[in-house]
Length: 230
Image (cartoon, rainbow, N blue to C red; front, side):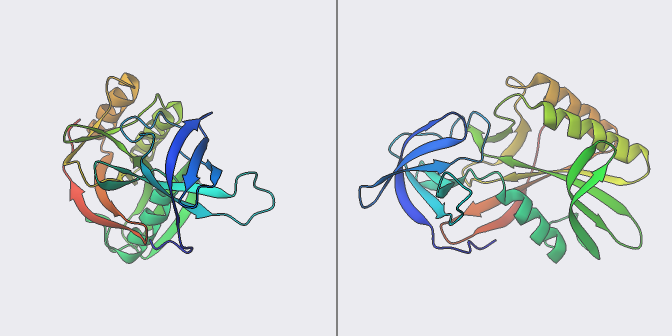
């Protein structure tokens, strides 16, 4: 996924009200950027850290920048929760995610029951519903999800189990937007119910795929599949 606009460099002053961040640009100007990440952003918030923003030219938007990434421990961490959906759609369409190749039809935002899944894919043999989650939290060598209790995420797992019961393929795809981790796992201490449901989902046949992305100011690229522990 290539960024369509040249990103703007700055440093983080603070993040507040969940969806806002004060940023100091290189020329000294202080701006407010929209933060798409509604979670705690644990392990990827550091005042004074370098950041990159996308400029937004939309008269309907109060904020004129979207916060894309932050540099933590010398490496970029992607915090825009909208980008993993784009990455997943592009990669599944191109057949570059191990285990999700050879689909001839791929569509975004498809409903099943009372849930809307990020990606639907099919070929002559099967239909597959795929839910995509952004992962930015790190603890040791582990990438963890979620970084806050997610009722919506719990609902998606329940519905993925219904998809499987209806004879279709169900996939939980975690996109890890940082390079300094080696294994994916659920954040049991933060959301024990999500962790419990994820284990139930795997037992019910829901597949878990964890893909690590390399984040740069030019693009975000899926680079490898990571092992997971549940």
